Image (cartoon, rainbow, N blue to C red; front, side, top):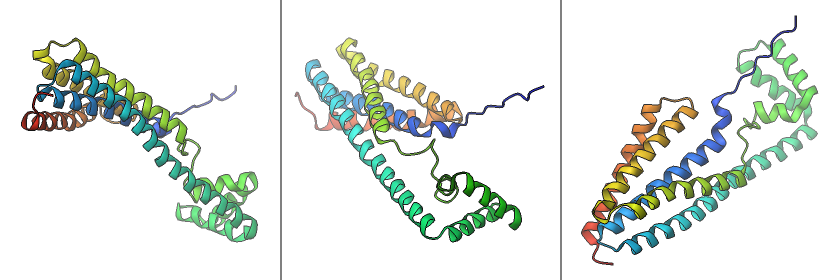
Length: 232
């Protein structure tokens, strides 16, 4: 009877896209909601509030995309440089690289003979992949992908930023600050819980963490608007 295939999916496989997506959506909601609340607290007109919020959405999405692309590109450049150096060392001193790989496995708990055999077999199978994974710590699942990260950040930022803007459009003027704040915090709590669940962490902790810091940002921005704002 054939053995059943055991398939596993680990949370670390989601790190690349999850980090960019959560950061983008969270920043989109917080920054746009804070901008809307701050401008509204300065007694601005609804049109001024919406223009400020829309400008914040566009500027924030582009900023997130550019920042994420530059950041992840730097990581990708470092990974490429390490791989190029590793290829050169493998070509110039394969025996030393084999000993280095064997030493890594010994430090992980294998006896000397088994470590040597494992190093030799992995080297024969795919020497660069073995060193990339076990010496450099670079895996396919966590490899830097600048364009993917940039698009995920810009897209999720835009979706997140649209939420407080939609609330600001439909909310009565006298309740705008309260409804934008409450709606944004509710969305952020859900986002924090979902992100924590996707990453294998506790949902309540993730929700409370993001809600607390977001509420603080909204409160500070509203305070600035009330203290320094006049009719815009």
